[in-house]
Image (cartoon, rainbow, N blue to C red; front, side, top):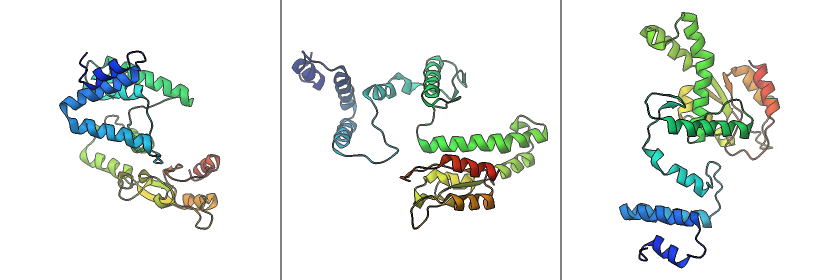
Length: 250
């Protein structure tokens, strides 16, 4: 073993108590350092930051070493557009097996009927959910009304009419400055371009959600989606009450 390398020095000095996680980390870092020292240096700096600072950003994480290794391997080379067992290209069976396993595990963990594990962040997941609702509630019925199942068979006029319907739906979500997320209809976000977006806020005196006022807005606006969720609202949400409001406004 080359005792001049970081990995060599670690294995020699810790031969009686070798940690496999540390071994993998040092080996990976050393490989990166040989190709690009700048990247390796930044990784070490990030490790130092994460071990010395308290992170309060909701969308960040403390992932396990196993997760790090699963994210950095030969799977990076694979292009697997589509869904598990329904890809556009051949040779995706290994990715299919992993994605199917992840979906099954997520369903068990959250007691869900279905899971979609491809989004790499919450913003992507929200946008995908939006499109799923628009597709189900607006686009598919519009196609059925025309007696056409394949959008490619539509005339340009028919397609533009459907596009107009899909892009004119209303969204009512928590105001960004009240703790809502960018994807809740903030005008600098794609969600405000997808929808005719409206916002509800918190009571200026209590800092709490006013469900009666939310109901008033929902009944007036009649949104396709009444969004219940937050990015930085530190109180419990009465999801049952929000469901009642959603049902009431249709």
